[in-house]
Image (tube, rainbow, N blue to C red; front, top):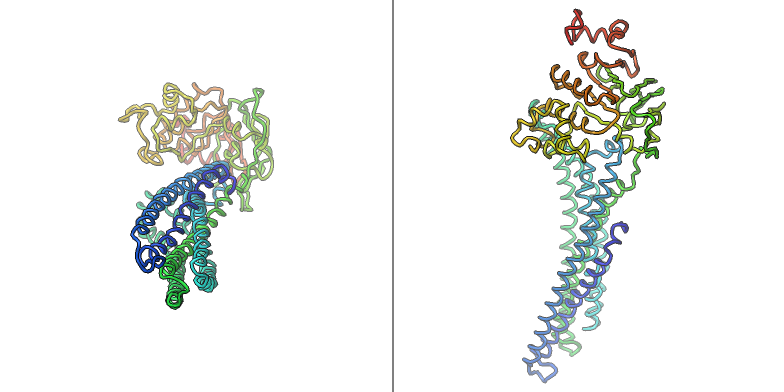
Amino acid sequence: MWKYIKKYIHFMILAGLCMILEVTVDLLQPRIMSRIVDDGVLGLSTGGVGDMAVIVRLGLTMMGLVVLGGTGGALCSVFATIASENAGNGMRKDAFRRIMRFSFPQVDRFGAGALITRVTNDVTQVQNMIMMFVRGMIRTSYMFLGSIFFMFSLYPRFGVIVLCALPLIAGTMVLCLSKANPGFAKMQAQLDGINAIMQEDISGIRIIKACVREAYEKLRFGRANDELIGTQLHVLVIFAFMSPMMNLFMYLVVIAILLVGHIQAGAGGTTPGAVMGAVTYTTQLLNSILGLVMLFQNISRGSASWKRIKEILHTEPELADGTFAGDAKVRGRIEFRDVSFAYPGTAKPVLRHINLTVEPGQTLAVMGATGCGKSTLIDLIPRFYDVTEGAVLVDGVDVRDWDQQALRDRVSIALQKSELFSVPVAENIRWGDEDADRAGIQRAAETAQADGFISAMAQGYDTPVAERGMSLSGGQKQRVSIARAVLKKAEIMIFDDATSALDLKTEADLFQALDREKSGVTRIVVAQRIATVRKADRIAVLEGGTIAACGTHEELLASCPIYQDIYNSQMGEGDEDDGQ
């Protein structure tokens, strides 16, 4: 944590000095008040005659000290807040950067809800801990020691009374904190679960309503929330028990001081003002102890959150970056060399011994039944996953040797599930090339057959897109995503069933436009429709994670039973030109 705090240590030092000033003023007030009572009101030093001048002088002194202490307290809050907020800002940014470098399996292991909680709520808890530590540790410790010191200075027996009560107070604190601490980590984990449910339900609200599962989801969320509330109540009950116990001990101290003060004042050993000052110091001591309890509570909760943040910050990305940044010798060549792949944590391979080469400028189509490994195959090209065996080469270089950014700069991808953001349409397309101008964006949209419906919108390309693209139809979202892929200056284009929501005419117009605008680009098209793949240079048919056949449409139609079955189920057994 020092990495984030040290940059703002000067603010923390200033906050500490200002807090020392505030506490010093608080500690001086009871001593001054005792003099007002003894000398100004009772006149013990002047033969029992009160002295108004002493009352006025010391009263004005107290007022001046209050202003000075209040200023110190305000500045302490400002400096401590600056330090804690900036430290939290650095943690949050670093955590987010690290998450952006995680592989897909790492994100899955943490869970989206847990990652959100750690970057938001956990960082906030650490910020609170830093701020409370700067303000609370100095205030409580200085107030605690100062109150005892001044009580000894007023009358030593008062200090002894307080010291006798400290073991009981400390024992109660240790017992309660040891019982409460495990609850803080449990609360944060339960908050992860609530965030995960919220994220799932909001993103899947349509299917929930379509399946009339609102009641079930309410119960599921309610159970998770009840568990969190149960843990919170358990912790709060512990602290609710501790607070009155602390008050009880301190009130017993006050009673003891009053009894001893009454006896000693009558015997001339102390004064009424000293007794009054001792009672005030006891109150301050109680407040400092309660403040210490709150400080330990914040530290305990903040420490639990810091462990969760540190887990992100110290988790190294599984996909180690290579150093190769590419050259101009070969562009757009893809090769799979005896590639096998199994998802992390599973033993059964999804792909087995894949050997396949796509030359620059060629179009390879990939077909097969659901679950045969089509999407997994193309995920290996931009290195979303590492192969289990074999190697995937782009431009003759193993993707594991590539610099990941350089590799992915060469690949543009359009997915079946189009990911759009809550920004204008033009900005969603500009994700393909952040330097593109409006004319380039519009050309990409024209190629993707999206310009027509975009231009017809109320604000055209400046029309905001609702969250997750809910304001657009499935086909419109796919075309915007395709426009984003077209805009990117990449040598390899991947379409992972990205035209499934388009009608055949729109799809045909799209591929004709791509042939004109991106003629030299290597293209991989994953699709389920014969009409989508039949014009590809080659078609790879996957079955059970292996390549059952690979060839042109005509070759597969003549020799591959799997392809023949797909063709007959979609096109019928008549003239194949019917589907052109």
